[in-house]
Image (cartoon, rainbow, N blue to C red):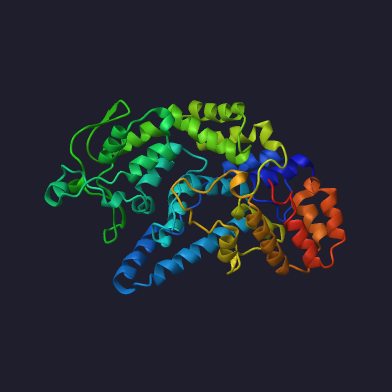
Length: 422
């Protein structure tokens, strides 16, 4: 395995598996994953909403929704362990973090379907399509409280005196699309919130899920960032299309992709290259990913620290695990990145400084030792050659050779500086 192949597997993928042959052409391997057809959504939001309704009526301990949450989290981890398209899977995780939905504020059973239905089908397609799918998904509507937002002059608003909830509008502008750099005002946030009134969720409909409620929708045309949009559901769809295609949105997405794949502080030319791909293709995310592959700085080894979940998945893949163990959620919690539980709508950090505190690094050593105990019969030197290839430092190889046991040797490999970076 040469350095470029190793970097494709580590930087763009999820870390190599020992039971898989490395690609002969790493760039073609990455590009091929972007052309793969999108899988059918599974799990689905219908099952999750039925569980939410059941638990509200019958089960205050939320056992059914918690069980679905755990099932879907373990299934998602297992997919990451075995996928033949790890670059595409990394993009799924990246966009799921960009559009964070957290079990801190929404029934966890909805998050697996959110990833499956709103994120996964669009990672190599149109950002406008992804944005619309995200904003209409029950998980996001509930997470940011748009399901309780009421136009003050709507039928329901006049009768109940209930009013706007600005959360979804604010986070869509600030985090998901244009950012404050576009110069929008608080008045724009309010008007966008009016545009999105009526975008809600039904637990009992046929089908369940997204439901536009005209009686809650603020009547009249609304102006957002200098553009005027009609009332009704169509106004919201048009506003999202406008935001998805805005130059400031392209710059935001390009910066995020460059930070994730290139460097914590990405070179301006890397951002410009991805931004140009988005501009020229009207927001095609496959083209943005292709542009990212073409940035030479993204092929420099050991410039990004693996976030905890990346680190855990890479360790399990290195040991050829085919299924996430039942204790995987506990390991991620110990590492400081519990599954689908980001503390804020801006998601988990992509900067090394936020994961590299001394206590956090000590916890990685603890997890490395625990994971090594699950595969203590494996030869650490062979695992290291498969997992890192030419990226394995001679000092680490020497320490592995001198380890007192196979488990200690594996733990040394998995906690080494080069294994913790991508």
